[in-house]
Image (cartoon, rainbow, N blue to C red; front, side, top):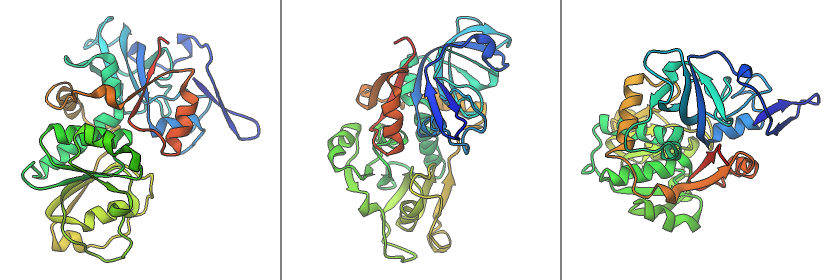
Length: 325
């Protein structure tokens, strides 16, 4: 997929033929088997210069495939690898192509327990969800601490956070604006599903009733502020998204009166050690038994409607792109 900027400053995308010589420099040439669609990819595919500065460009912040050429001692031709984060698909040509070329530091060898396709069901969304759960645990939130809220629960990060938390023994309350998706979320392990409005307090009060031992917020804005104001003493709230708003309308009171901790979750430059640990967890103790339930299969040619849908908040789960189709 090549996204181009037109003379009238609009953008268009097309499936085009390129050569390996068109790819940037890097240690590894990887034949891509699968990629996945993230909100960031949809922005890049629509010409958002906050994500991608220069066009033409190939989006795709996730890729999984087989090393074809290696200039790095840690990898050899034939190794299966997972690529997420760093600059892939942002300003470096990404996974919506049959081949990518990347620095070796961007690659993780496919962990035993995950197929290449399964690794892309997780992708950046799953990695973000897993890192959020890790941050909750590091903050002392255990299954015995109480309910954990997940906002934006039908999205990629949200649904995988619901599944990982439930699989790890937590009682999860999922918040969504899609009433029709209650059965989907309960099937992933949510103990309860609440409306978006129930997670979006409009009273303006600086503190609310203590409810949540922890929260994984994927949307930002007032919903994040509500989670913070509703956290129990010592509660931990993680933050990884801004689709609702980049603003955070709250006060210092939850922090200085309830010892609430707000932890940002950023995955692009996550250190290699944590990255490897989390992929092992997703392949092992945190591997969901029902990954197919969150998966929408697509070819590269079929991506356009999914791109438009994810920009409007219409995607449930994860769109996995099969580069062989």
